[in-house]
Length: 62
Image 1: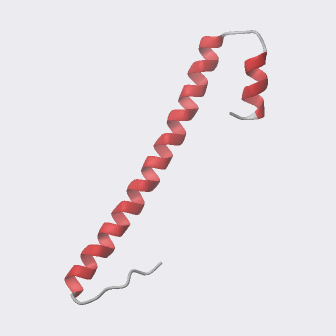
Image 2: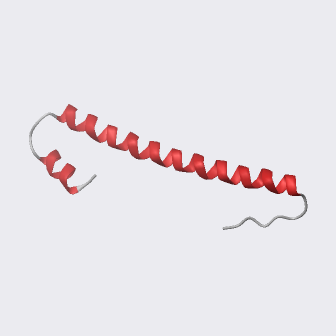
Image 3: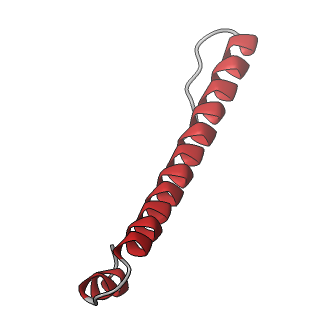
């Protein structure tokens, strides 16, 4: 939660709206993290399959 969200939480107002905004932000962060992990996993799988097609020992590039 950023400074702006913290200040907004101190001000009296619609707590339901604030909670909904914070939940939406949390979902967006989680979604981006899952997408990144999915891309990294797919890249690893692609490298692994390429190594199997080549045969022999394979040292992944990092």
